[in-house]
Amino acid sequence: MAHVVTESCNDCKYTDCCVVCPVECFYQDEKMLYIDPNDCIDCEACVPECPVEAIYGESNLPSQFASYVELNKERSESLKGSGGQITEKADPLEGPGCKKK
Image (cartoon, rainbow, N blue to C red):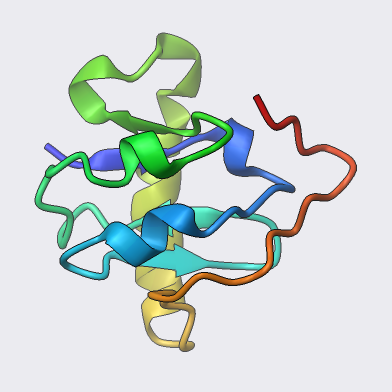
């Protein structure tokens, strides 16, 4: 099992979660973050760090976010080759679609 970044991260891109990840499995594009399911060790360290509650364990993933399992897998694989890994805190995107809880 792995953790999944979902829709709530879109247009927000808070990176607090990346800093606590012991296996550095987060990747980013211009809009959001993704978790590489092959590297995630399911430690849950990232979950409480997300201010928009965008990260779920696969076993607890609400059904409306089911497509994000494959999206995280595809995007993290694609971003691995282009230097999209993120391990340090960065300024959040906080775009117009961001809804901080």
